[in-house]
Image (cartoon, rainbow, N blue to C red; front, side):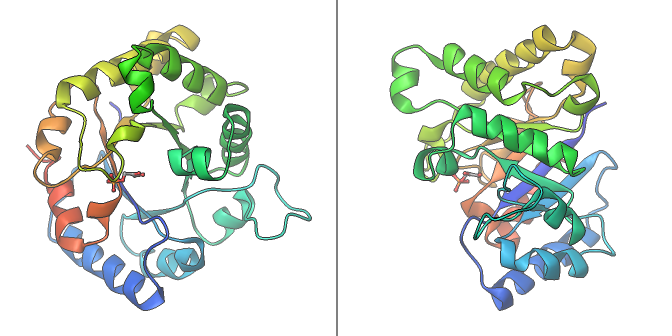
Length: 255
Ligand code: 13P
């Protein structure tokens, strides 16, 4: 009923040559895989590679997404990129509210909300990232933090918009650390998020939204994560920078 999504967040890695080689390797690998119709593979390279990779991947089912966007469609915002620009080069997705943007670039919950709405306005599906820090987890505040982040991010997004959104649960303590959340910890958080969606919208809509997990996903731990009922795929950082490991994670979605 809902899509399984494997998205690679390349972060600030890969020049033109390396990005082309990686995208080509992933494309070749998936062509031989006989992927399920409800599986969506997404690459989120640095902005300068988006146009080139959209063209390279236009003949296959892999989609391309930006890593962030500005909340306005155009204007005097030196260095920024807008939703309509991403859309015009062929993107279908954009990551919003990644913890690295929240902490290093001071993106607030309100900013994340504006960006998610800007993405939908530009006919892009926002991949909205939420997740607690280790301190928040140790203080027993996971529910409180996720509730705040999800509720704020989705303000102004109505029933018809939410089913175009993807939620990514990325516990900050699991990102780039090798400390993956256990399947049980991740499932608990995903269930919490789906219950929140049911209370904001309704149960039927909540069942249709893909909620993906991010944080040290590897070929070794992917299958156990994907076996959980509310984990609908992964947002992969480090392991998306090599075709073999990213393809192995894609393969782990298969029965
Ligand atoms: P890692 O897979 O490197 O932990 O990164 C996760 C992430 O931040 C994806 O957006």
